[in-house]
Image (cartoon, rainbow, N blue to C red; front, top):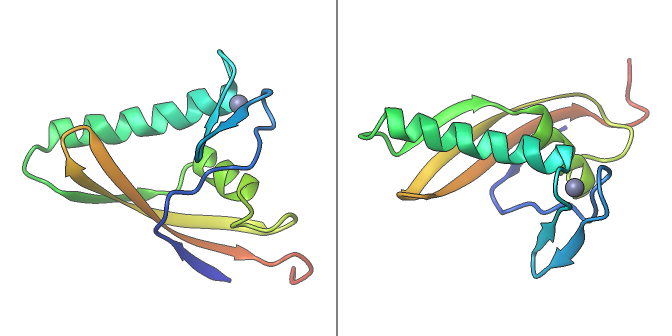
Length: 112
Ligand SMILES: [Zn+2]
């Protein structure tokens, strides 16, 4: 199955900490590994745009942290395998970016 995810995807809960829902975001505990990984991805995107000031969009592979977020939010079903994808990162304005993901995976039970 292939999905395109353009909206902000927020996990329902965090497997790494006792995060609480605040509005449409999860507020993670200090030191949460998943939050640290997600922040590292965001920081890397920001650094890419800092290094390429004339660009508004770039493409990269889906990261492990993003796959975890998509699993936790229910976009990728429990038991899905062979998850891969591409992310399009668009700079809206300095300091504000949007990510769109194209995700592919094998549905649970369709393993062949
Ligand atoms: Zn967490």
